[in-house]
Length: 93
Image (cartoon, rainbow, N blue to C red; front, side, top):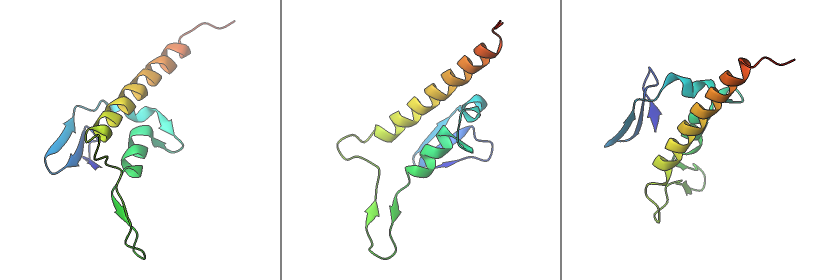
């Protein structure tokens, strides 16, 4: 998985690209990076050099799992940003 330079598209694999990612998604941060960037980093297929063990987050019983997870992370990020913006407009006494 990788983001395009303008971060509006996510290339999931050679035949699936998710597009139309709003820039507000990147305002919701987990530490120093957005939740979406964290998921992209953590859900990579990797192979340990010494043991050869493959860490594959894809699920054979649920092939749409990661795509659904990405959609959920985008939704939660957008809603959180919206709520934080709304809170900043409240007059607190």
